[in-house]
Image (spheres, one colour):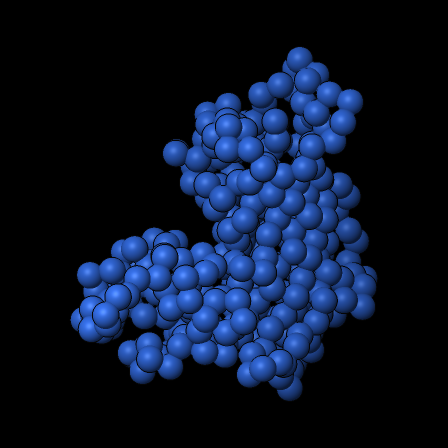
Length: 282
């Protein structure tokens, strides 16, 4: 049913209002440095809608990761590097999820991720940007442009966060997802809504969602973050974590981030189920 492009092409490529100023802004520099936010997978998601017979069917992808860079003083302020995990597709039906992951649709076994990496952006409204880049899905890469609404930043409970979202349509057949199109049983055009929250204090949510200290890694792990990137590499991990490292590292990137560490401690979120410490009574 349902083709999806995590941050795919908009219906009409917008005409930038301020593109002539973008190069000047970069060359002149700005008073503030661009901030980089890590996508919080707990508070980010992508919804998709496709025609199913006479009705509309909605589904979602529950795991989005990546980074957002933003400079409010630049006309070309927004940079995105986003990954959507295909295995996180959620239709509300395990049987249907299995079909969506199959070769008929996303072929998750061979193509486990869909990615979007921006190459340029231009301000086209007060808080709206035309973001161009390359979308890769099911082994097909296409240049696309989307409108992204920058919702702003927030400093709360020791965390600096940002919010952004985009809405657009994409033809799934352009990415090799053709099941049901020729028969007319399923639509080709897919409506996509992507909503993301990022954290400048490290990957993932704060204490309220993942159990980690506000602003990034929990304190008991932060001291092991030798290079200061907000993650614990396996070589940096304390001995008591090394035998569980692969279990906690749920996204398989070779490092434990704040969301994974929080889930480990709190038994919630995206990570592993909490287990007793070796020195506890269980």
